[in-house]
Amino acid sequence: MSAADWDERYASRERLFSGRPNEALVAETAGLAPGQALDAGCGEGGDAIWLAERGWRVTAIDVSRVALERAAEAGAHVADRIAWSRGDLAAAPPPPGSFDLVTAHYFPILRSSGPAAVDALLAAVAPGGTLLVVGHARPAPGHEPEGFDFDSYVHPADIARRLGGGWRIEADETRERRTPPPEGAHHTHDTVLRARRTTE
Ligand SMILES: C[S@@+](CC[C@H](N)C(=O)[O-])C[C@H]1O[C@@H](n2cnc3c(N)ncnc32)[C@H](O)[C@@H]1O
Image (cartoon, rainbow, N blue to C red; front, side, top):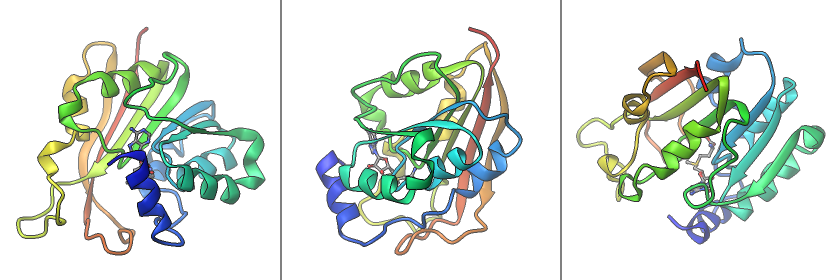
């Protein structure tokens, strides 16, 4: 989907997502000391705002102007701790080695686009920092969303396989969701990858 497609998707509803932080973000980062975070594909800002409320300084990037406007409005109370930025992470990599946490929830990366976008996310994690990537698990047969080809996208397990030495995988698993999926979606399980960058 292009930036215009995402803008159109967001504009089609008053709010597309819940505004609450994703449950895997809360579970996986609650024990981390706050530092610099990158939220890749931040959408309407629920995760970035939650992190900022806990003391993180967040760079929140999304390709959708509509989503970012909503996010900035919702996060006005923590505006001093979040830099909202419109950008295409497939085309413009974030600064390397800069973030104690790089989090990407349901961030779509097409396999056909090659490894650059994934490599840029990995490179953005500072030594000692954490990578958290969460996706939708493969839908059960007969429950595939219309027009969505699971195998066209890069998933957390693919990224786990791409991590070489210099990373410690702390979680790489499928989990049942406890919170309902967004309206119109039928996802029941998440795939979660959390990894620690151990060296430069
Ligand atoms: C499924 S939404 C998830 C939003 C948010 N992370 C959440 O969990 O609610 C995916 C988001 O990624 C953004 N996005 C898609 N491709 C992008 C790209 N190449 N660069 C930056 N953002 C992108 C979309 O605009 C959208 O907000």
